[in-house]
Image 1 (cartoon, rainbow, N blue to C red):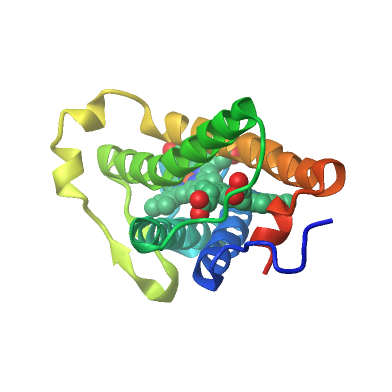
Image 2: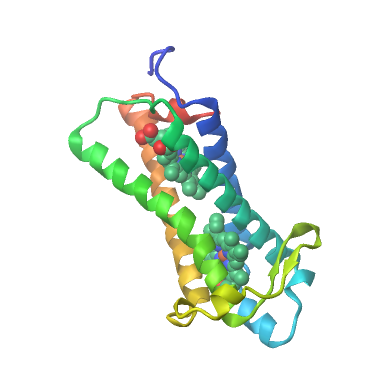
Length: 184
Ligand code: HEM
Ligand code: HEM
């Protein structure tokens, strides 16, 4: 087992990690399937709690991720564990991919809404009808950003699942304190 004084992540790192994990998972479960069809039928997205919550939680994830990146740049360091070089490299790769996806999801969502001329509808009645700087950009027309967004959402959840399995492996097989370092 991990030594009782084993290094842990700072409370802020842990809080941001678990808030992010919860918000991502709930946003994914609410994932507005059939969004395009609803929009073609002329449904106002603001009347669909699933869409409003999905977009609000997704933007919360963006805010938490930007805050977390700032904190990662400023924090004194993170706990280090003894492990083989390949394991260090793999963990860096997976964490890097998770970070990239946490930023790519909101980005592709805004590209999708902007390029299709859909409103951004958030909790509390907040509504942004036009995202003109996206609608008018060349990037907006380069892909079906809604499809890309949905695909990246699936990739994020698969990767987070593998990441969680790795944490359990560290805890129960290697018993090296990695999971305990991140637990609330
Ligand atoms: C943690 C971040 C997010 C995850 C994991 C996620 C996941 C997903 C998934 C899996 C879908 C596809 C649903 C389906 O086809 O069944 C989807 C669709 C969608 N998401 Fe997100 N999303 C995230 C953030 C956001 C944000 C920040 C916004 C808006 C600002 C947003 C807006 C949308 C919209 C509008 C669709 C429908 C796209 C279309 O079909 O054209 N999402 N999301
Ligand atoms: C959507 C869900 C999740 C996302 C997006 C996510 C993302 C991340 C990211 C980006 C890091 C690196 C953090 C840093 O350097 O400060 C991290 C670390 C960590 N996560 Fe997650 N995570 C998720 C879910 C989980 C779950 C379910 C578990 C446990 C069962 C877990 C356990 C850990 C542990 C133990 C670390 C520290 C790893 C180390 O120091 O090598 N995560 N996570």
